[in-house]
Length: 284
Image (cartoon, rainbow, N blue to C red; front, side, top):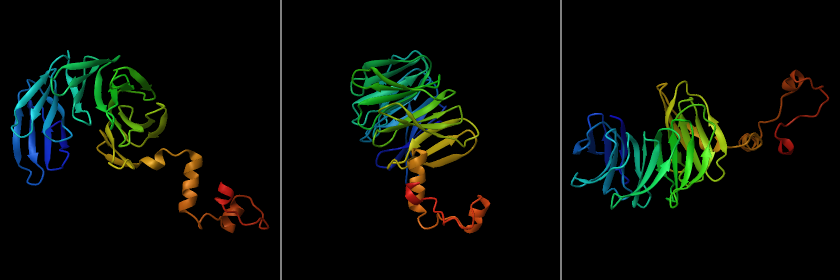
């Protein structure tokens, strides 16, 4: 299996495999409901539409396909990419689909007519693409280590997120669309300001490439998965605080226990006559 995803109501799961199929499962009973057959090569990530009525799949066969989740029948084939399609996702309103491909493009499609709407050009393999929560933007990740933000209506590049030292594996918006988290072969995940394209924080700790990163539904945490055989959960709020704000936050939570002991003051070189020191006094 290459990936798994829940339906919006949590009742079903879709999995995709190197055996050229995708499968729909009952999340309560773990029984297979349907098998989606039609791709000619391995299937990569699949996603449900926002209303759960459709599934989009991406494949090494250079196509993406839209399926009816009730009948399990193929509704449409998205043709146009010249290389493997590595990701596919619906827009929040279900009207469009964005795909990312080894042909160095991401493409936006009409989810009803299956017609190509726009091509988003890259300098290298486009490995991942997803819409922002309001559908107005698209973020893409490529193998040159760049994430790009695009205007979903005009298909114009809005900003480039530079900072990773190796290829990217994924990119995702926070639930409110204000931040982006990227995952990279450079063993880090990074948080970015989606409006300014500035790097806010670097999540260091993994000992191998980070394969994916995503925000929790309330945006307070980030989960990362790595080839180092671990998944890690990060506090998205604390990770994005400046040093000054982080100290201020610590002082709020440590109120009453930030006074240095006399022994600590002596070790620091203070005279015994020095007044007691509170490290959080005066807003420091």
